[in-house]
Image 1 (cartoon, rainbow, N blue to C red):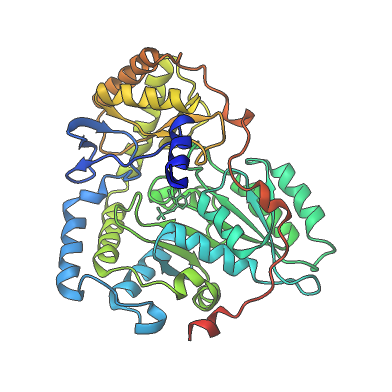
Image 2: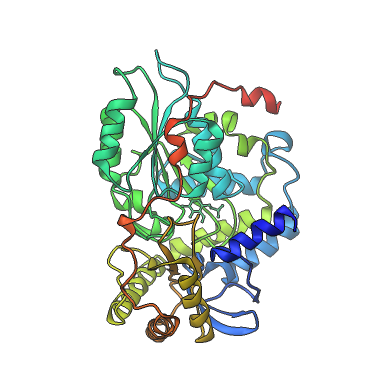
Length: 432
Ligand SMILES: Cc1ncc(COP(=O)(O)O)c(C=O)c1O
């Protein structure tokens, strides 16, 4: 047996083997999954814009006008008109001076965290200390790893722990630079970071802030402008990362920030410098999606009303859903195999909510991660909650008996707690 086969067997034995399911047709609220019609309850296409007629048309028109691909990194073959347009529109939407596009949210976090980690304080060792929530997305964790940044991982949403880290890791005032990085809406739990306290701490300690609005953009706040806007913090966060492949239905990502920060990222973010620019159809699709969202902010209200509705229905079935306040609703099962069984049984009943297992979530907290869409109907959600309740019982799980998320061990990060500070690297020179 090869080492690859052996590893795959291990994954199967521990209930962690993954495979891709086949979906026919576009990512609507109903899809045909491996030949079976189901209600899709796990897509980040929260507003249903991925197959909106105007968004599709914009992508098709852009392909005809500007071509299918961007050809190279924008630092090599230039920025196209459509990139500029989207960046201006995103900066206006997010209330920042500027914005810069990245190939994906994963690449944006890798690039932004790495670039900010390289900034050094006045008198201390080179490189910033990164302060990162233990449940941050894998791309933030990998950004810390790749930067070899000294990283302080604070307990989930625990501002007292964060304050302790800031006091103990930065040294005397102005000695060491720091950056706090957090998801705004946590992708697997649907809770929201305490952004006001985080920004207040950042100001008090003179460190920068990065907020990843992958699941906030288009979903929360006035007109879907995100959790930062919802908290009244526009202009108070150094970099807001947003994605174009979730609520905006296309592909790619952006960092909304000051013009100076944009200039710095353009010169330092390696995932921007060394990667081909977003293709025109994806950029045009995101621009059209943003226009649709701005013309129809009621979509955001519908999304959140749907999330409230399914939480009510699920609570009636006995599920514990109080931890979520957004469009992401986790049904924590605990054991990975059991979560898969609940998922498969629900699919047989016509509801697709993918089971999420370690290392995406902490050990012992495997779950069905429900992601609502504005285009789901109340009747669909009522029926889905009943199906999920029945599926849980049939699979041998009593709804509500899952391990509370806060009691579980974190999945990511621990090894970064003691990573050496980073020596500066001249990335811009390397690109030229
Ligand atoms: C919080 C968060 N940040 C970043 C990403 C990565 O975004 P993308 O899918 O555009 O690479 C995700 C993806 O799921 C996410 O949940």
